[in-house]
Length: 78
Image (tube, rainbow, N blue to C red; front, side, top):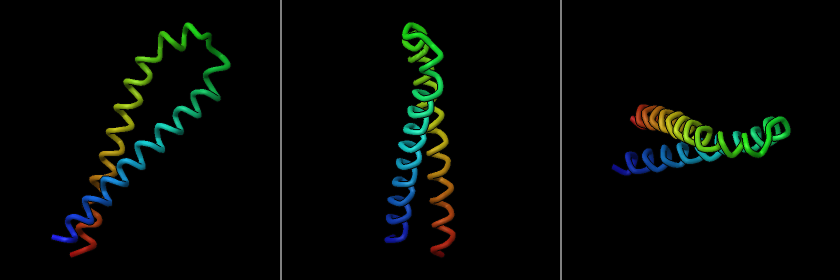
């Protein structure tokens, strides 16, 4: 039971770390690459779409990575 709790905690931490790091890389890249080439109006118009797509994709990828880590840890602790 102790292994199960530690596996779940590690998987959740990896998932959160993946989500936050992906989001920070996106924000940094977007501000460095796209901001100089588009106007403020274009940024405001596209902000909802970009954030909706990017946050949902980052959450999905992070969740998949967390599940993979959980199963790897579960197999390793047997």
